[in-house]
Length: 116
Image (cartoon, rainbow, N blue to C red; front, side, top):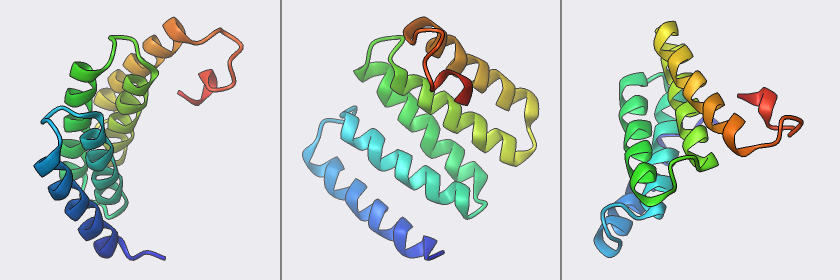
């Protein structure tokens, strides 16, 4: 528990491997970057976390339809990082983008709606 540097090393190795065998905007790379971003966020390395989560969003915007729920998850993750950084207006903007997608895709009574 709390072995973030080991986790980060493993996720970075996975990313290096995937970069060698996958096209540059493959969804599996987004997953790798997401894992790396999550660890940086837990470690308090918010600028690195933000960079990773923004890369996830770039990949997803290319690989997925405009209102895919996975984009909402990425906006939410970016909002969480901004929130941790104390940049609340940027966090709110990211959360609102996530919620906009959520409202377009999910029925109003869906259990995930309040989570965003």
